[in-house]
Image (cartoon, rainbow, N blue to C red; front, side, top):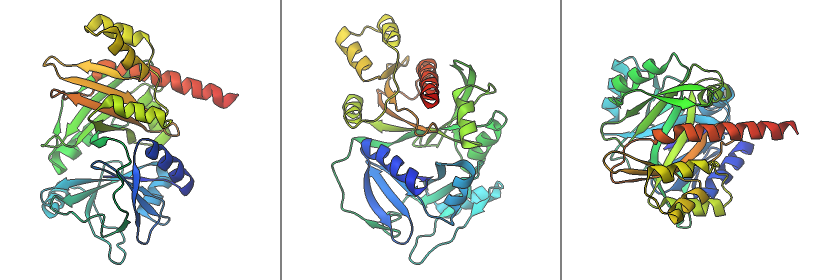
Amino acid sequence: TLFPYTTLFRSAKLTHWLERLGFVKAGQHRSKSVSLLRQGDINLILNCEPYSFAHNFFEAHGPSLCATAIRVKDSAKALERAVAYKGQPYRGLVGPNELELAAVRAPDGSLIYLVDQNEGGIYATDFNLQPANASGGGLLRIDHMAMALPADSLDSWVLFYKSLLDFEADDEVVLPDPYGLVKSRALRSRCSSIRLPLNISENRNTAISHALSSYRGSGVHHIAFDCADIFAEVRRAKDAGVPLLDIPLNYYDDLAARFDFDDEFLSELAYFNVLYDRDAQGGELFHVYTEAFEGRFFFELLQRKNGYAGYGAANVAVRLAAMAKSRSGAARQAKL
């Protein structure tokens, strides 16, 4: 569950983006300017409530992710562990008939809500829920959420998640950006259902540095949604007018040299701007990116096959180059 904060104007724009991605409005808060969007097992809460933690976070960072909720075996014990490791607990104002959830502050000041696995009514308590709508898309769950961090903060974020929430950390990898190098280290829960790639760069013009400047600090870089049929989802997204990141055609020429794909399949990948990767065990990744929402964060649609566990590192250079080209094109348009 994610809790972005937006103004009413930006909320309408973001809601329109998400609806084109197949999300449907599932409920409205009983007393606040907060709406619930759903698709599959994904819950997105858009918060426009003034005089709130979310509003204060917006004032500091603009449209951003102010909170996430994760399921734990025992929220009381999870909060106790977090406090024992010097985590900062949070208790906000709870209105009449609202559910009170344990929460701790993340290193960027956002909130992490700790929800018991057996707590099934966290939305029914606070929201007037609408009947289930089956007309949305086929996105299933949040696959991962990538963060952009200042270069000197990676170790503190890794320590936070390992100590307070018992996450595991993958090895650090170095990725090429057209304007410098990006270092990435992924964190994941013990069950691997929560994945958080953390990204830093010491170069001022990389995509990570642009994200930090846009957020005025750490913030979500992109959110990846898992699906069962990438081509069906991208076809639906294209038909709905979702602005997808254009991938240069020479990328698919390179794929033809690396893999034994027929021309028809390569043409399908190119038409839908789908990137492809395969690991040594035969696992496959198909993924596509949207353009950025207001130049800030963007979304990734992906499909994993045969146990692929990575994040498409082989395609990072292509994706970042395409993003840089998109940014420069947007800048030229703004000057006209």
